[in-house]
Length: 90
Image (tube, rainbow, N blue to C red):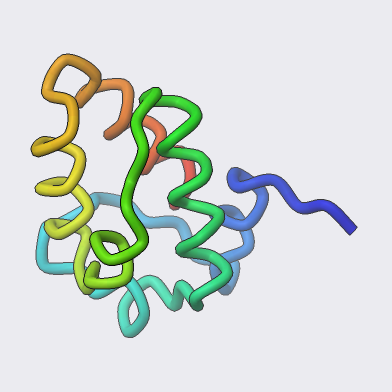
């Protein structure tokens, strides 16, 4: 069964993320597992037209880590990438 990144975001324990804070932990606070993170990476790479090395996204712990990663890769697409992250999580 194929599940889109946005539907995974909606299924996060039925919770909506009212405001993304840099300190939110991807696993502990948002309950993303490794498959969710891979789906997020795929979504970000497609939407932002970037390539995220495995070593980089494997080190993500918080929403702030994701943001810094996106900022390093392509500042021009940062708004688009951030919207993708928000959509994924809501």
